[in-house]
Length: 237
Image (cartoon, rainbow, N blue to C red; front, side, top):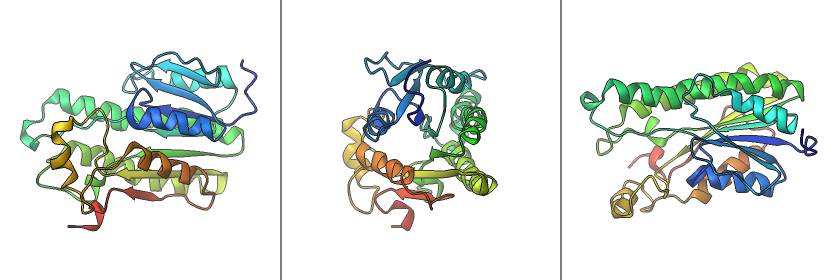
């Protein structure tokens, strides 16, 4: 076991690029050790970062929590950042699309969170942060995305349910609901069109989401919150 067991420990899924990579750096900056999880995450030179290659849709992906406990001795925070977004007209979705999106966005989150919470209870509390999407609250005919709404809408409701279930036991559960963020997922050729979908006229930056998550991490009276970081999308157009 590492000598860092007295440090708080955050598990971050989807950690290899974009928002996930930004979260790993942010949690290290505030003094956490990190379990960084993704299918393609590269080993880290930082002794306080344990990288675990795993597909969160795999039924055995809850092993990432076991790996964190074996290495660091505790789990304090889980950021369910891994997610799949497949925008298609509803009747164009295939069974493979459905299984893939549900596997990552719902089943993976369910299993990994279920594995993490007992360890949070054992240290007297913890924090779960789920990443959803503003499209749950603000459907847009330019971005048909029923699978995102089906899965992330479930996550949003489950966030509130978990927050209430564990409110007296020291575990807070919150969500960040992003607009469209500049990540490798979106080719630069689409940026102008995507920027126009936001009332403020621009896309979000990875730092906008990272700062929202770190705010929630340091907000002991906030639980069950869906924090919209979406350039005004959820307010309307």
